[in-house]
Image 1 (cartoon, rainbow, N blue to C red):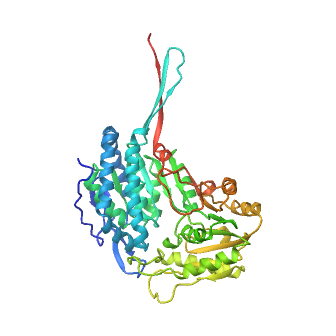
Image 2: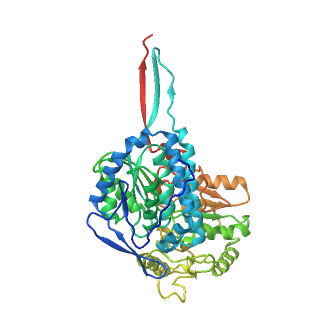
Image 3: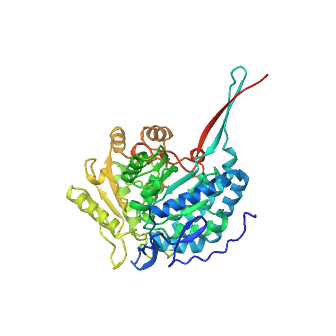
Length: 491
């Protein structure tokens, strides 16, 4: 089987189906729910509403397929994963159309997600031979060694903000290690996962990859609580992550990876390169994704010496960004995912104003957008640590700006929340950069940068922002259990 074999699939966006045991199926109940375009609120599709019955069927199919998938060996699994990566690139433009209409994310940014999905899959395909055990110094007359074994069936629950990338790329680590997967996409943006399911159906043996759509309260909960799913991975909010831990622990001992929320600091020293730091702060806030990212650097700490100049230049640059049709290559900001997210942002903005934060720009939907879920990039200055906006994740395009002089105070504020996902430090002084970065209690720190993830660099949070690391070697190994052997030698 060539790694570059074409896969002939024509995905019908209006008729998505789940993938269970190699078959494209409706939900057991026959129920469907509406999926709308965030840009204009038009109906895109009616999506199968999966239930506990569908999850049970998917887990059963994954269990049946897992022994043969594991026995196929690393080389065969890697070849199949590489073919899947190639198929994603081959279908990239069509996937983009589906993804953008479903999520509202702008097409220029989503094009990077397609490339990243294929790159990460190929990374794990190549990394598979490093799934090694170890030898242990022998006691007299014995030989001791370990090897790695897959868990069996892995449950993955992914969010709405990067639906294609999280659905596709996150299959690499569990699949290369010999596990089979049941994937549950967000009910808010499930269509690219359904498309991926149709691609997977043509590439993987039946049951190796399964896709169950539906709501978290039923399909997601059933996946978390299934006693045969001993390995789970979730990306989403802190509240849901805590619930998953509690719910999973009620039925079985499970290994869980959690990438959760963030209220991430970006600290600018007076010697920073302003020409790079200003666009860096905009990029770090992920305005291209309407701020809907756990890694957004949504707390901006500007030294008093450069505060006013930096803020004015940032507002000027933001005002020049094009808000518009996410399918337009020139658009730089699209809609948010749902009316509920808009109302959440509106509530944060109102409360921030009531508590005395100064609205610098934005704070309302942009003019001229009469339908869809649109909100202007919003910046608040004069934010203090006690404000609700300063302490809670918005998951929207709202940036809090703090003025500072004492770096010890900044570090205290930066570390004073339950979150610890990422952070960013901007300075030309290497000693200052490293010293400051080491003091921030977050799992991933950029220095003179913000936003991008790099191949093989582990990503994950500290404190309530998560558990475990992804996108690197440790991610792959986390989908295996270590098994030890002690041999008594006979001579």
